[in-house]
Image (spheres, rainbow, N blue to C red):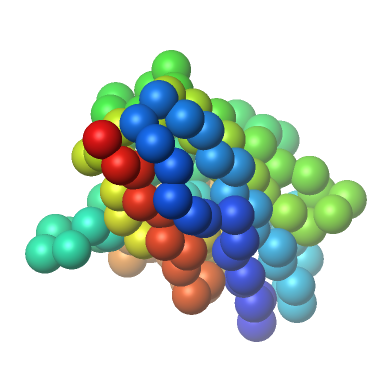
Length: 123
């Protein structure tokens, strides 16, 4: 079992930055692919970024060049640095973990989820 706890969300003006953190506990963290997803009101949950245990990173086109996913296996933590934020980035952001190291952009491939953290970008 893996427990995931996100933090770092908040309210920011357009063009600003936020850094989300996801602390993992339980099962071995370093062998798990990790992902960030987001869900805006009335919309489906969507892929944002993913990272393998050796820190190969993958991004949705909508955030490429603005967001950076990283991980610190010694601290069992994954991060999402979000720069140049736009109002359309407003959503609840979720951290997710897979039992394997194979990354995926599909939410139903992930086995564990955090409770989510709200990110609101004002125009």
